[in-house]
Length: 352
Image (cartoon, rainbow, N blue to C red; front, side, top):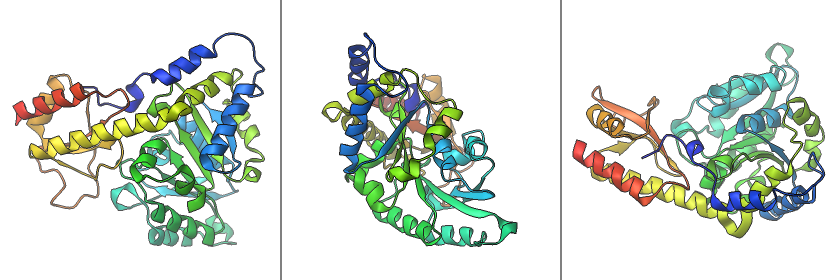
């Protein structure tokens, strides 16, 4: 019953097989190897256009370095107030952007909306040196509440960003979970909707250590190699990141692992609701936030369930936890089994 995080899961068999396949022999370093070139071509195929792809070690690095490429003197980066870049990255985006300010925006379901975004950006008028400069907008897909921006919602935010002539960045730590949830193509969820740069996460979905920054206009990536090197994320043995991506994409393994994780999350949500619990937000990817009696939560943790209490903010009165209830986070992965789900729900049944 390990639902602490998809980061806790190991690596998917397809990824480990590819790593083993490419583990011997010699190849040029720093991304000059044929395998990295081949994976770059795969990214082009996936996104239906020529893109610029740069491997990094972590999602934090991907986000911070992508935003650094759009930074301005006195710049402001607009994001949801509960976003990963604003809460969980130790101010790395502000550090890497040489002090660009993160402006957190409220919004239901951990989403920002065009109207609220436009109003927030209006407080930084162009040409007024006292207020700094609007530099970029960043959204999380899927969000920190496990919800997913629709393509139409992304398009509307991209339009709001365009009206201020700034780029839209997508933190795609759980990109594939969102993608299979929407049932659209990678191109439709990104550049066709107006996204300029993507932090493409694969570690949470079955890779060992593989993240990438994708620019949909290679001209916007002109200085990125310098940001990456200065930030300490230029791999000498880049082929081992490329190998992970090769296995990840092979035979659509990346889509299969995400579909499985999402299905496990939905099954848990349905079971919890059937036992009288509820979820704080809609379950649209591989995260869910159940609300149950505190006694039930304590029984689950005593039985070995790896789950965490979670702050339930901005919920309506009929959803928010009461004094004797607790909201907690669960994350499923490619490694979550039917038995894990069954055991959890049986334990919850006994605690009811």
